[in-house]
Length: 300
Image (cartoon, rainbow, N blue to C red):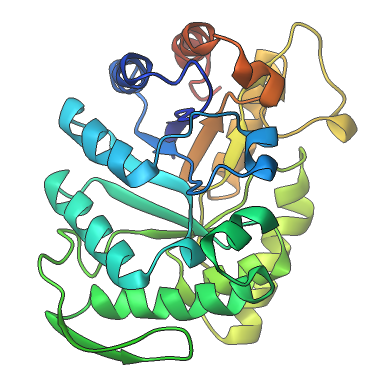
């Protein structure tokens, strides 16, 4: 099981120097991958949860590809309806090429209605737009010249080169916790990427739901690659009142052991707590937490 870190690409502390330091910590501490979040329009709903400035993820990953050597780089999650799939496919293919095939593509449908409005996208149709755009992305990564005809996007004889380095394309992780996300993961994803789930929920609810969705579709069950919090506490937390990855270090280590036993191929750790914390200059403290955690996160 590979373990990664969410790099907070938002808030006053998210300077270019800080983001470069994050990449160095993730790589030097021995983690396997890093991921960054996505927002295009920093509307009030967005900044209430993720204070500005907010770095555009594909631009940032291009930079981080140049200052890292080993770790994989990805999005958690790229909001598919926000960008024309022609642009998204080309940007991600270029990132995969320039990073020597280190790209992971976590995707989702989005949630901020005012951000959709600012971008001129109908939030009520974000699920169907996402599904069609994903089909277009996969087509664009699958051949040198591609035509596509859909309800939301259509194009003819587009030269797609350079195509991604990884074939057939970079791994697609489908983000989201609900039934629709699980069905989308079965249809499109190399992995299901649930986000910040309650302790034990994946075992009791999430994975049974994923297996049922795969059985209904007559398809294989995708891999499990969750994003969980990294919130160590001094006191033990009750399991019925904590998130996966929250509690004493021994509880967090047990959570990772359970995810490994459940077959998770990747686990992404997220130090972000809330908007108030993100407004503070706490990136150095978060990086120190990550460096310390690297020593006690080994399998028990």
